[in-house]
Length: 314
Length: 231
Image (cartoon, helix red, strand yellow):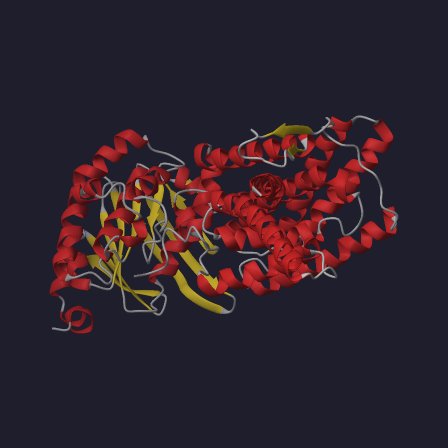
């Protein structure tokens, strides 16, 4: 049993790190510009398709990933400068509706250009999985603990990326501009921060992280128009769960969400076996569990598990 | 002249909030603009600092800055302490101040000036700004503006919503700034405070300047006393 719990935690952290970077990107855009970007996953998907095409042409994996990320940044700037230009500052809901439209358009574009056939994407890291045997005392059945090395590498990359983004926002001038802009628009303007620049930066970084997450999952999900639809939902849950108040909260929320999800699946699995239910596979309930977690979080602690540092006027 | 505006107008769509205002400020001078709610005072400051679009002529240190965006104006030392304080609520006091030096000003040097002026802020430097009291937030807002080493400091109703004793404290601090040689453009509803403090004053009504003159004289003028001081 101990092995299964540990195994769930490990798998949970690995998938959670991906939810985390999607959540981080969403939270970056939301906190800075006030827009909940519904097209987040699909923007990432378009970026991965671009990367896939470049890979097919050049056979150079790192160049394609690099150009895919650059494409994501340009796409983000395009969304900010062109699509949001007219409605910026008017209302957040019209900006939100625009992102909903973009979600559908991107899906359509991907279908027209690349078709419905799932395309394979090369593993960024490919190593054989590692097996770890715990000492006999803790592990009477002698089941191995499986560490999928590829996922572990993805996990490390995702963690480093989020640490980099957090350091960037704390230590560099453009990063501080993002923070100030997210705290108060007029306040940012009076200290001389170019708010339009901060907005574009948030979009560029945010969409790039979505593309990045897309590259990490692409070897598993294949490259297809709906590859990141569920991930966007997971990322959104991660951000809600961690509270939109901080970038680090969104990432940590992702990790906790991943672990929680796998543990719930494990518990349900045990329960179903005890009750003799064999028609439901608990893994199929993944999406329902995630949705349930959003609802429960919003009811019990709408500011997220880490809460907001400042909850409005006292 | 550090600031000169001529036929200066600010509009929001079809509503003209500031109508063809002409105003000037000498080096090291303290000028106040007083007027009731909705007279266009805040719009005037937003226009001067470039945060909202304005029409008309504007010269800063004898240079035409009408085409200069707000962030460049800050960089040149025109700093606004805006209406409603607009501090960064979930950051610590110290972080708020550091952001004040985002475009100009030596953070270390300016922070010493700010802490000398407002010792309370020093005591609270690790606290989350949103939880400060109203008076402390106002001090923080003024402190943040000072962090950018202003040549022209524009203050939008620094006494709004504060207890009289705190208002006095804020004005003591402003007097110190005057001694430091900073030119101040002060906007107030609290006409008595503003007129006693400033060298010259403009009275704004419905977006237009209706009276201008030395503030000590205005303080003694019957029409002003009746309309703005309630005496």
